[in-house]
Structure formats: C-alpha cells, structure tokens
Length: 102
Image (cartoon, rainbow, N blue to C red; front, side, top):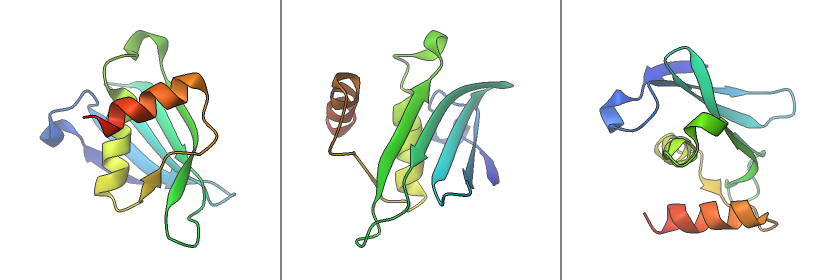
C-alpha cells in the first residue's frame, strides 16, 4: 500500500496506509506513532463507483479524537468514494451524522 504522512492535514493520525484484501475490499489503516489506532474497511465499488463501509474500528484509547473521520477524509481525498452503509448500528448512525455535519 501507499504510505504517506498525514500531518499535512493537521489531523490525529501520524501516518496511514491503504491496501486491498483478497475479497476486493479496501482497507485504510491509521497509526499514531507505531500504534495502529484505526481501521476503515470499504466494500467493493458498486455500479456507481461508491464503496460502502464494511467495518470501522478505533482503538478505545483514541476514540472521540476524529480518527475514523480522518480515515474517511483520506478515503474521500483518495477518490475512493466512501459511502455510509444503509444498515447502520446506532454507533454507526451517530458517526455518519457527525461526519456529515463537519
């Protein structure tokens, strides 16, 4: 995957990586120093080229600091066309609303 520093965006992650798994899903992994603190997994693109969220995870100690939102922003800037899944958990709904209101 591509390695870039994220400091240019003045956001919580110090670096991130983007890769793909065997199922064709796109993984965005965020780190603070050597510690992996967040993962955003997007499904294969649909007919419109949008990738729905498959999974979001943030390390407990780093929750509420915008880690997942930062990964979302990176996905947008990388032209991955992230899209919120229509079947969301309550946490997912709250996060989707928070991102859309930033």
